[in-house]
Image 1: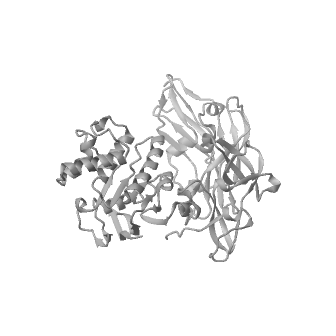
Image 2 (image 1 turned 135 degrees about the vertical axis):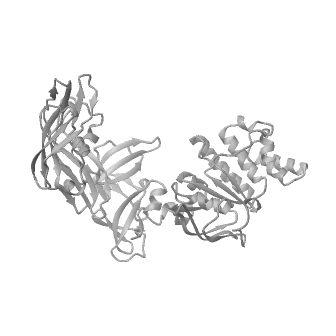
Length: 526
């Protein structure tokens, strides 16, 4: 296959921020190539550089063996279809398609032949005299494609052209675009962030991330053999866990070794392991290579999507003290005020520069007038020291309506789970029954009241607390002390199956060596 386009070390920045970081890419004749990646990864910038709408800072673009860096857009044998089709509303369908030919002063007979051929190609025969503003989104897109193809370019650039269409029409147009590309036999370069579009239409997918190319390959190669965890997560549903490649064809994860088909890694090299949801089989627990509990079930029409937990997460249990906190009333000024005793972690006191507003929030301090209108707390006074102990803090309004509560400064109380590489902390707290009853999202509020947080022990990045367990009814809670347990998610696998299961079922997970895909861990820049 003949090489048609070469991007050589393309660098581009905007306002000092590098958008493309030395991109090198070859595109061949008659290929359907998709640039795939999230917003801001540089895919549209690369497309516009090829089209001549942007100029790169460094590097060279070669088209059909010749440098086109200084060739203006209208002289490049390249046409573009944009997401907003940019049709001329004052021209009908025929004249929109004919526009480029008329600019070139093409003879009327030739224009008629070419426009009618394009109308046939995009399945719009008989639509020539229609007003383009009266067409559906899909029909307008077909006109835009016909207008670009009628000039017989060597390359057609498509910048997310299906983004404005609804799901059903988008799927229809995916098939149409592939058919059109195969029929006209030219190179299509397509930009999208939609993985399904890329897998459906492409001969070759270029996965981009932060201005760099992560992997180039066929849809099958990208899906079945992703180069790294980024590509695996971006293409299709994925289960990715950390593991160790003990030796060729042997990988360890979930505390046991499995056969795989991968090789060429260093002995005991840390790796990422991918298993696609559809590659799991649900079996009896004793027959499974791993055992777990079904945490949730979602019916997807042709299959069920299960979340199966094979390892429990990291957890921390605290005491919730429910107390009846009577409002203090200032009859003279017509004001009321309330606040709760609270706990503060010594580390937070030393390192987070807690403000008066933080203390107001932690104590749930508030004031209001006789008409139940909120009043600002303008005074916060305390004797809190940066050492463990019990202190007093006073909250007050401009009219000197005040309330004092206790502050318990305690040593950090957190759990470090080296096995799962997670730390989690939470504090005991005081709360009133009314505050619990008024909660709109009790689990979220419990995390806030307890200052619950979890983090990765290696890089201190935040880890989500996914489960909050308690044994009281928020609507009828009474005074007393209650255990609240905050947990991170354990090892949870997404599984696609036709087997009907319910949350709480014990199951086994089975898979073969071909279902395990081992990837090098991404190199983190210092």
